Amino acid sequence: MTMPALTLRHLCLTGPEKESACVSFGPGLNVIYGASETGKSFIVEALDFMLGSSVELRDIPERVGYDRVFLGIEDGDGNKSTLERSSSGGQFRCYEGLHVAVPEGLEPTILSAKHNPTKSDNISTFLLEKIGLTDKRIRRNARGDTNSLSFRNLAHLCLITEGDIQKIDSPLLTGQYITRTPELAVFKLLLTGVDDRAVQPVERGPTGGPTESSSGAAKAEVIDEFLADHRDRLSGLVGEEDDNQELNEQLRKLDESLARERITLRESEQMHRAVLQHRNELRRKLEDAQNRRSEIDELLVRFKLLDKHYNSDLARLEGLREAGTLMGALSPQVCPQCGAPPEAQNHQGDCDGNIDAVISATNAESTKIKLLRQELQQAVKQLRGEAQRFDELMPEVAEQLKVEQAELEKMSPSILSHQEAYSEIFEKRATVQSALNLMASITELEDRKAAIESTPARHEETETLSADLSASVLDAFSNKLEEVLRDWHFPDASRVYFEKESHDFVIAGKPRGSRGKGMRAITHAAFTISLLEYTLTNKLLHPGFAVLDTPLLAYREPEGEEDDLSGTDVQDRFYEYLRVRDERQVIVFENIDPPESIKNLPQTRFFSKNPHIGRYGFFPV
Image 1: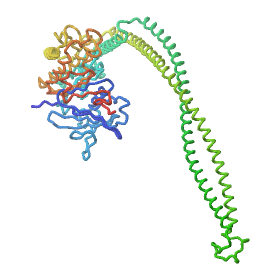
Image 2: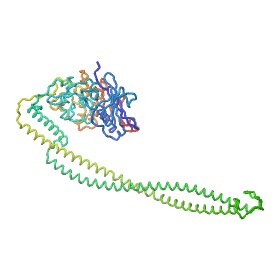
Image 3: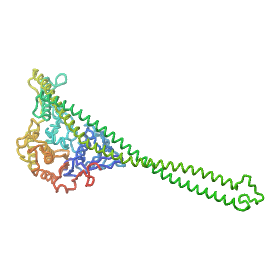
Image 4: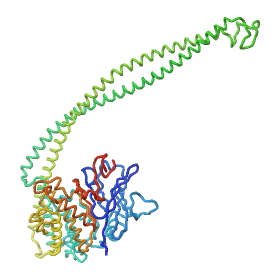
């Protein structure tokens, strides 16, 4: 029997007048590696977006002009479908078969983006049906109230973003305390196949709420969770520093530094704007001069042609004058115009053949053209003088422009340095202010908790429900996680067990979350792969794929010697382990190069960030 599972086949963004941005996937191991800022993390975010996330696609310049997203999927029975969604979000359209554009002649099924367990026309139910997890119930709170399972309850266990893979929190939790109970319930569902439909809610009080004792305990529990969260965030901001007075002093000094840096930055920017304005004025002056010089050249060409016409007209008129003079010097003849004999001709009357009148008109026209030609020559002389002045001016302006441009280039590093310094101080101030706000919130929460605990409870016994798994199941999964870490040659991969208080794993006596971000990333990846393998081995339901963004961070950006895996073969063993296990799909996005044996696989792609080498990135250049 084939276990229900999903295989992602392709992701494609399209838009009018845009070359499609597509990437394909196959069963088993897929690797996309290369430089930063080539769209790898955007692909992960777009996959999550197409699996029902309500988070909008990141607004990056490369995305402009793309208005549709297509995701091709294949289920365990080989049925292929394509999900289409507007890049701005909203509902989905589902087509049979795999497509990278809207197919002609196929009517789509409209799927709502919002989960509804009573209907099948939504993306969550559609995906849950593909993996056999419909009609499941999971607990939503400690009282035992339940909700229907949504595909979004599963997404964080199979699609791990770059930010999530290195987080301090447990890999089976998203870090939101209000969702902790359902997340533990989902983990239990995947490891046992048993949902929470049999759970009965805690008895409620007369007003419909919980009894007073359970309500107080629940409030205290929630406050404890918020306190733990606030203290973790405070520790992440300022470490062990928790002196309110010291932080206020830091804030005062940072405000002073920020004010000084703001003044310096403003002065530098004003100077920069002044030089920039002068540079732009010179640029416009040079452009105007070049345009006028081109106009002059064009006018001179036209005036030269006009002068040729004037010369031609003068030559023609001179010919007419000479011909009239010659005709007047000849002996009387029959008039060539009217045919009158010499004795019948009237030389004093008007006639088209009046040679004197023709000569007189020719002389007048010649005089007029000569006057026009003199005016033309004067205009040409003026234009040539103007052209000479522009020829002298333009090199001077170009040299001034070059000087101003050099000054701008000289000022730019200083401006950038001031901006970076200002941003750094501003970020430090924001961190200190956030720490002070957290400390104020912690004090307030502690006061609230003390008030709740000081209120005597009317009932000594309270009923609590727990989503904790049985020790045997957790032990079996911990053994699987230890086995994966050993296969990857993870340093000191021994004594792995689940700690119920943190809902995370302890490896060789050290909590997973207390390690550096590189170690957290690789162990988070190990958890995700172990869950994939455990459910497959035990014939349990799972989405069937895993997407990992930068799991090998410890090779590129270790936080210290204990977080550095560069001297080990974990990378090689990691890829080799995934390469030979092709029952389920794993998609890895990495910045560092994989081993040569992985580079040569047909489902490995390299984003070069170089338009002249291979594929630049996800989006076409």
